Amino acid sequence: MPADRPHEATATDSPYREPVTTYPVRFSFGFGRFLTVDFINVLTLGTVLIPTVCMVLFAIRFWGSWAGPFECGLFAVFTLATGLGITLGYHRFFTHGVFETSPLVTRTLGILGAFAAQGPLLFWCSCHRTHHQHSDHEGDLHSPHLHGKGLWGTIKGLFHAHLGWIVLTGNYRYKPKTVRDLYANPDVRFVDHYYLYWLFLGLALPMLAGGLYHRSWEGAVLGLLWGGFARIFFVHHITWSVNSFGHVFGDQAYRTHDQSRNNLFLAMLGLGDGWHNNHHAFPRSARHGMKWWQLDLTYQVIEVLEKFGLVWKVRRIPEEQLKGKALKQVA
Image 1 (cartoon, rainbow, N blue to C red):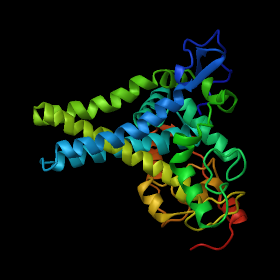
Image 2 (cartoon, rainbow, N blue to C red):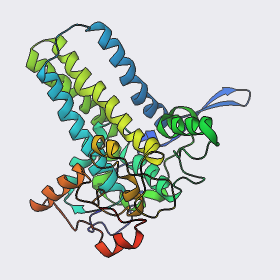
Image 3 (cartoon, rainbow, N blue to C red):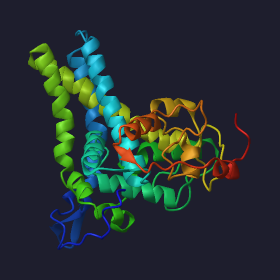
Image 4 (tube, rainbow, N blue to C red):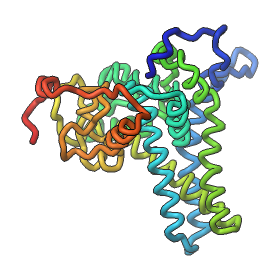
């Protein structure tokens, strides 16, 4: 994170409150009975199920309708933009602080990440830091290795790591102490506080683009489908696949305390985040694809931003440190 935020924010010096989505709300039904609803669970579950249901309904409604290069382009542009919002923004910059940048770029990356509908910024970073702290051990929110042995244990573990930890367990909470450094930054608090606005803006923009291009409400709906719901569905499952398959399938090039794996297929779809063993071995590295042949689109974007002076102090791992943790020589 930028170094110009030296103090820890307090309730008196912060102009923003934490969003309601970080708090459980308790409803009383009398006779000592209560129902506790954590709105972050409801919101996250909604962004998981609603895009899926809408895709099915819209596919039935518009079955056979023409969808040409514009819809494909809209899907690609918003998938890339919001995917980078997660991999470059939420993940590498905010969670791990792999470079420093200006307030404008900070807010831009945060808003693009919010467009992906994976939760408020502070919540996402808190969950991911907790994952790194306990990776594949007790306390890890989405490890696939804590659910028994054998084929059935593997299946249960993969489902839990991919989706079950969100829709079934509900055992994850926003932990303020894990993101105190982020909360001290007013740009982060701004993005986090207005998460719902960014979420709806991320749906409104492709809908507007589709409506203007086709000059019809049907075009607007198609824009919402491909640039909104279909894109959210796709990016969600790529992120979850790194959590699940990225800890089971692939190889390990570096020594870690978990079962993280490097997976070429996930790296291609996940803009470089599929080099998961590399990342867990060196979490503060801006680069996940450590070898020349390990495609890491997110890191390449960081390099471009660095050349234009938009980011600086990019963290890279010296060769001797890479060799010191290597399990084997990789070409």
